[in-house]
Length: 311
Length: 276
Ligand SMILES: Nc1ncnc2c1ncn2[C@@H]1O[C@H](COP(=O)(O)OP(=O)(O)OP(=O)(O)O)[C@@H](O)[C@H]1O
Ligand SMILES: [Mg+2]
Image 1 (cartoon, rainbow over the protein chains, first blue to last red):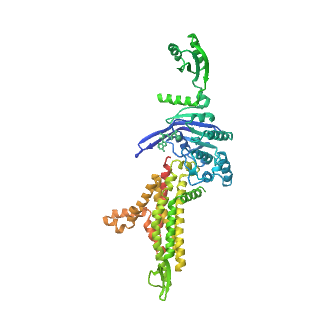
Image 2 (cartoon, rainbow over the protein chains, first blue to last red):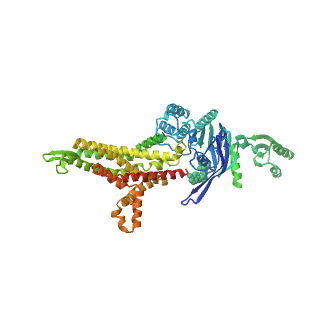
Image 3 (tube, helix red, strand yellow):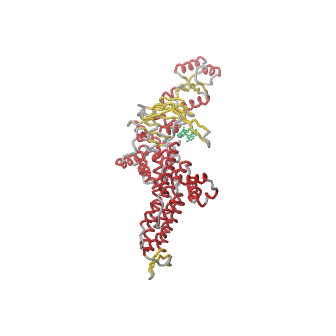
């Protein structure tokens, strides 16, 4: 059984007075998320990330396709007892204190009354808000609200956690803390579904990543798989690279650029790299260093989106 | 139960707003004025109610004094009803649009709550707050008249429930437009316009809209509409009759129960179909 599964899920929003204006927010989206994973959905603004979560939580109804959570076909009210959600742009009643927010939404989420006090205490401690618990939420800073939102999502001890941009507005130390909390939750067997465009964040903790653009799934895989395609090497050379040699190399590598005494060669395999080096040596180009550049998810993400845009 | 939690949350939300303190403040001022103004006088010819020390009517027997007190209370209740419509609707019309706002509705609906439960929790929370305001005012006035005139009118106390019922009926219309537009101003305007342009003219159609044409179909349609929509004016004047110890029809209350129930069901259905 998958924690989350969607099959050909699509959403077309209809706007305008006569609902004539159509926005395809998500198109034929199929993914499977195994339990106990941190799964990240990555994509630029407007890609459809939030739309996907909203359909899983029945905030919006699919135009076509189907989805299930913990093996339960959606829509289903009861399955939300096992789900925690941190929405983007969440707004808590400003007249409540942090403590009261957790109690109110905890009750609505089905947290047992007997366990309430203990859970509030430990969650406030977990997100570092204990000293602010009696302050009205309207006086909270953005990062504090985000922390409160995370605690709120955990109140009913969910099996699946949906987090829409959880580190938005949180300072670097806080981000690291949140990452640690998420890793800890994974340790306990929880499934975490993250939405983000902050790729560097996702890269550090995700087991699997899906890249979404304009409603379509571009790629899904582990972080390593995502970054493996096209390894970049920086080759230091003495002097300049003759244009003819550069042209010859470009014939077989993915890309080759030169900045001063450095060449950046994008190769599919190490054999390709060696071919570049052979070519350079055959043309009497002096090699001073070869450095393997680790492709960050950020780069492969951008190149994926760029390729899609060119289509 | 989740609905109880929602009702409590709504009461707390409204308690944090200024509008209802204004309403409670006006009630308090009116009660203080009543406490100062209302009194009773015994004369050799019988008893009479006094207003700022002046006799409000010729002296009457004890029995007729009760009638007089009832009329006085009915007058106050009529004033109160106006206050409820203006301040009550203003104070509570934002409850549903606020709950449906981006960022808030996401939180509610991600919980194991059905949408109709959210709607009813918010609806009854608002009605409960208005009930508290009404019971404060009516209860206070009941005490004042009882203590100073010596007439304890149980029907007056009961009218607190009736007036809450009338508000609840009107509030179903406000709720409907709140769900439809997710906009507080539109919900307020729609509620007031309903009262002024629909419920009022339909209630007094014999003296107004009927005169436009003698056509049977036209008049039949007016009658039909009258029975479809909540009969706010009929219920209000019924409550005044009951306070004054007179007979009142039960039909408007029963029929408005169905209308308002239908309007709430329709609102829930519209909410159910919405994408957030
Ligand atoms: N309620 C709605 N009504 C109409 N269109 C909508 C609605 N919600 C989203 N959209 C549209 O659907 C598309 C996808 O939006 P979505 O919020 O899912 O993007 P996102 O990937 O979460 O973006 P971001 O990173 O900015 O949060 C956008 O074009 C958006 O305008
Ligand atoms: Mg989003």
